[in-house]
Length: 365
Image (cartoon, rainbow, N blue to C red; front, side, top):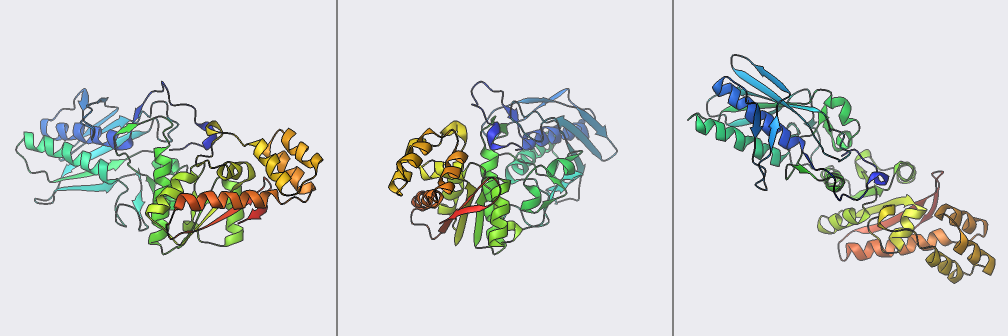
């Protein structure tokens, strides 16, 4: 899902869409019907894991002597999905007897090159649930014709290699294109499930690469600062965005030795307040809390009043800097306390870096 944390509105009344896995399944089923019957259907209906039965129109049809392929345009509904409008093509061809259903990456679909994902290195990036859905569709058509389900399925997305540059795939070691994704077949607008799943996949890839220290950054500026400060390899860095809670909760279940949370002052003020979703729509910085904290740190009355009257967290950070008040350090310690409480008793050592807008680390805990 190609979105930034600032893009997400309420999901109420937003149109749902279909995953690339659902589109590839519909395309494969239509191609199977053409392979056995000689004709493509006007529309094709598939069964999703939850029992829903959506129908898909075809946007591409091609048939040869021993193959057929069909394409479906990806409709992500109101979700800002990078694959919205992409053409997902499935080609099916008879394969050697006893071979079963095999999966292949066509143009625009990536190949797994790093361990840690739910697919082996060298496999096409067609995830397990879409494979199951496609396999069931192939079995259904073969069974209706009393034929063995020995079919090679190749999934392509024209232009997918370029689109993949906007996703996490290169960092996860998925090279050459997009992934065929989906666990339900349905895209829920702004659910952020894909982002959180990418956080988990990033951690899994790091662990499989033998990396014991991962870094969750709220954005590019904090990631650059953490890279320069820590000198860790590419696979160690997780595009956490606002989902510090999602990252920490996963690490509680699947720990690594160390995790660093790197973010701006405003974002980590929210973590220090106990918020595990750092997006502005989920809550704002508590300026009264910061004024109280400044007082506890020995700030003058004028400084406390200036903090309380400030308009932005950046202004407060500037006020604290001018007064030589260790406010950022105190926030880093409080944020660390929340991180440790979320990790509970997991064997993970947490660290916090606060980075200003210029990319300078202003506090560490």
